[in-house]
Image (tube, rainbow, N blue to C red; front, side, top):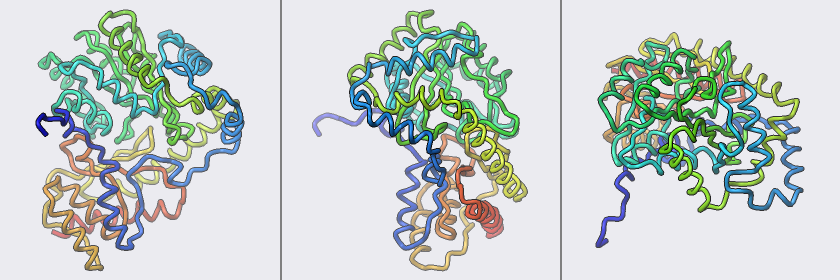
Length: 434
């Protein structure tokens, strides 16, 4: 081309959760049955959406209004319903004008980072959910800026480290928090969230809280939402229905803006998100119209409580099976539906392997393992070839540590136990092989 046409940040656009699929499919094409532990889709893993929720959606399908455009901000009835739910906590008050709908949180994240000035950076957690870290790095044309989630601290950040990074990088304009966190499953304490809020106040920053898993907490944990701690700080809360109902195929998420009018710069930024959405006309109408009817139904709290009980039991099961394996660190998650397994420092090397009987599968694994990649990728390629289990390498989550993420979503009890027990066995075999 006579001109360069590739965006300066294009190389930062990575989504390891799905990238691993193309590599796994090479093995699947050889006839190996795969166990897909890479993606957080409850429906794909066997969860059955209750009939009463399907009935609500079916009734909406019969209404002509479900096929029409809705206002750019989103369905008015739905935005009013959601604002009232937030305001019921009695902290920061918002109106329906402070809510903006998107086609899933992926769309929202793309807009949140894409319409910042290129010189303005948002520092986020490491390990980092790929959608956030990739979008932030792409908008800046540089590596993502991160603060450390430390397993030695229960996967919570060191606020002193975060403060130092903010202090010495004046490009930082905002702080991202994912609470409950993906991939670690940690639920942030009020003390830590208030500390992050205080840093935002000290350095005149805004906050971005991804709260898609806000109501998926268990084993005694409780989420403290941004609306409870934001005070007078400018902030954005990102929410959706993909995990909670669950309805991931709806691609329906929204942003709640807090204190948007307090700062002219932030107010202009929030308006730019609205204007960007206006160019697309609006987000999908049907799932928006379903939200008040589903979340406002008297059966919904029991639905959420039952799911949380199940996730809590699975978290306990997974922790019991994997935490006793030498060479790894495993913390029991308290929210979302993931668990992270971290290899001890220097536990991995390029000589380790797993026994793979079939020569054609071994050939593909050797080709994948020969690529220049962090050592946890190598383990995962061998794991796929030996067992068909597909997990996501921790190093792909913008992280210096090695390990992998699994889900707590498998509904078949026998298959889930087999997956966990096989993982424990293969970790032992792999670490002992060289």
